[in-house]
Length: 382
Image (cartoon, rainbow, N blue to C red; front, side, top):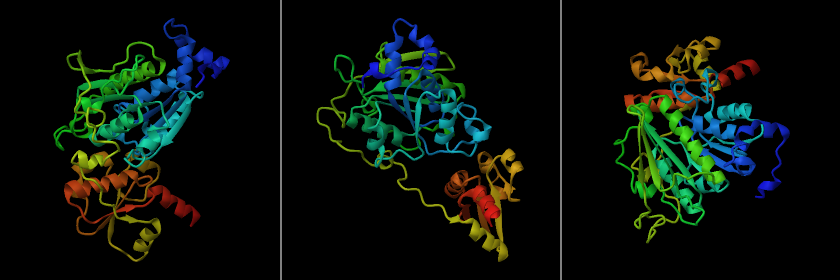
């Protein structure tokens, strides 16, 4: 793209003035940001600060891949969201926040999981990918797709008090290709060996620090300003405030782009990482079926997994057990009759049912399709 063809309005020039007056940055780098297309995978702990700073910096097109919904337990670190977004799809909520921050950029939303089936098509539309995910299958998927497509991958991960950052598959100005994630970790750890943030916890401010460093590296990759963190892994310990940077080299054994590559297409990453491949579908009940049960005098328990403020504004006279308190309240859920679980639109209640079935052995649960919103709509139109 001809960066000189990208005209800035007077309002944009005023907005980016503190960038443009830096001698080593200037108008040319700002034009490169405006021309850039950056895909951020995950809008949670790492994605929140990264997206805020990329949007504020003026990255012209930002794609967001995230199929999760905002939960109350996210808010201590996912600063992109507020209490009013609880229950909403993260990607959609992120778009609204970023457009309010910078109306001069485009935000593309993909409210879907990144999979082997769609990764090449999605990533192929962008110049740079930033991986803000917290699970091994997606990390290997993003890495492999970036290598197969020749895209740089700005990587980070966090757990408890520690974080790390690197730039993978980056080709420098001399044409030298840097290492990728498989040069650092050829194979994933055994399932359950490394806890996720949901299991091991994370200090809320840490993803703010690490996600901001990710945004910095994205900006450097796009503009060519500074020395990109390729061939190096930066580690930060928040407790001791110590950081170490390790050198990484390309490995001849890398199955993607080593001496004798064996992978030329995307694989089944859940299976590769030893994780369940397909989640069992959750049983559902429609609002119409719920009415039939009520009219027929069916004996069932109704549970609401939203937050108390949501319940206070509108409810179906259900037992309130917010999603983040479920594991401490399983004794309140009846095991001997049908139990209908609902939230605002059905996302959190699906998650609640999976949790209760997989970890607590429940087999009598039904998800209310469409949640209370579908119920209220039926009442209004009925």
